Image (cartoon, rainbow, N blue to C red):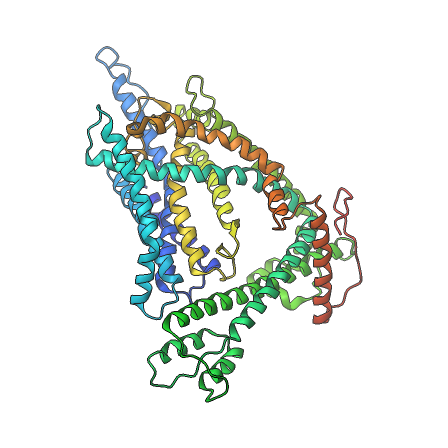
Length: 588
């Protein structure tokens, strides 16, 4: 099995990243450069997460060999110490250090240099590659200059210290420390939200009444966005493209804009181009056509995005209403009022029959979700406790360090890998799910069903590459495998070895890395009381809060909109207006 586990993980993780890219991106229409950059960024980050447990078990085995060799003395040679069992996933020496260097530095090159340039290139509305590259370089000049200034400041700080001698290795460590400090700052903010929101979302989602009420709320918001997108598209399409002859040097630019327009609008806009007379229009400039091109691309994409999201929301509302209706039905089968919206593959139709669906939705689902929510809540509590106490090595207070230490004493490498994998996977889910939920207006927004734009895909890749290395270092600190924090004299993991000694910048290694993660406790309290959502509500950005007046108004509006859609599609209903969960609380 030597090295076989590494190969299996590398292959499996690739298909995981490819599946997520296929779900959020459009593999057929988006630029190959965008897809390749995003796939590589996600793939490298997921590799770090899945390979790190193997690195931990291999390091613990090597430590066992070292301890066993040190115990062998001439006096005790007759009684040999207990031999160390080799883990099933043992990776030979020399492989992991090279692997980590390739993965880490490639991901850092992507996040700090290549992906920002590719973002600007993909977002540029210029009509030529040279124009796109020029725009990307101009937009990133300030971006790159800022990072260069930060690095020079840290360099001056180190150079001014009399006891330090600058070497290439120390310069690398300064760069790594700066990147990890930036990542840890954002990591704790996202982690504090995910540790509370993920268990809570599963607990609340166990109630179909809650899900339906929230779907009505989202439908009301989406209806507004849908109307705004349609109006914006109509405004852009009403722009008169000026009369240009076929030989005009800007005619190719106009034709490019026309190809980006929906089919319904292409004839009208083309008629504007060919219009021989009428009102006098000035000849357009290339800059004005570039601006128009950018507006067309944005309006068309946003219009298609809202159409797909609206369709998905209505189908979800129909399904939840059907579930609520079937709960009181004597026939233990889930009947869909609109079967055409629930076409699935033949394998799912064979196993997931209406009877099986009824038992899952009406009997088992609530208990399963609540049990899962309790388990996730316990994991969150363990993470918060460990983040606040991982710096204590005598006694060991971090729960993850306790579990790994117990398994290490019994040479139970499978248990070590499972504890590491489950722990780091939960941390990643809390952080990555927050990245997928974040929305900065329409500037950054990850939308499933192939509706995410190129800029958001690449921005998510940048975030993953910046968050994953400090997340893994933080996890190694939780299990006391990072000597910078634990101050223990033991073999370091191959992953930690490429990071260098963080003690070059003592105010970061002995201060920021230890005390800043404690802020996660305050962020968890803020998330528990929905302080962020309440602030956004006050600023005019509606958020779903169960005790909010605005929430109730939007729920009623969304319910009415769904009923109108039902009437328009000819769906028949038996007429129910009130749904109660198992505790008797009325949601509708």
